[in-house]
Image 1 (spheres, helix red, strand yellow):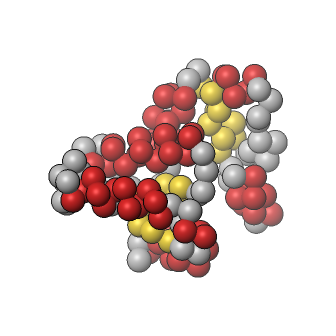
Image 2 (image 1 turned 135 degrees about the vertical axis):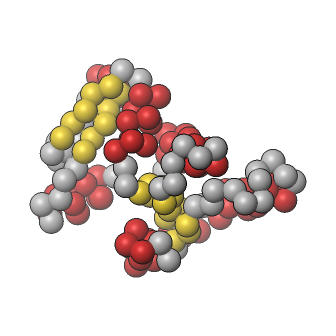
Length: 134
């Protein structure tokens, strides 16, 4: 996320940070934020991000990334939003997750017509998905 913030800052982009109090206490505040919104919990962070976002891009990450990704995907499945969700699958990072998702779909745990993320394997594909959804 630091590289994304640095890239946005280098182009005078707006960087909105939504940070839970616990993370702020850990000293993990991004100094490049043009707007910083403090919330009490991770749940509040996810809700506010779903409201403010135009598109969701899941970069390779850890538990927090997966938590936010699944929250956004589940919200899309039940119709809470119709925003694009993009998995940035650089170096095949999400291949195992995509395989598991297909298994869940084939075993009917996920509806066949489920809200499906767009997959990008490189930066150019990711940008194309952001711009035009293809």
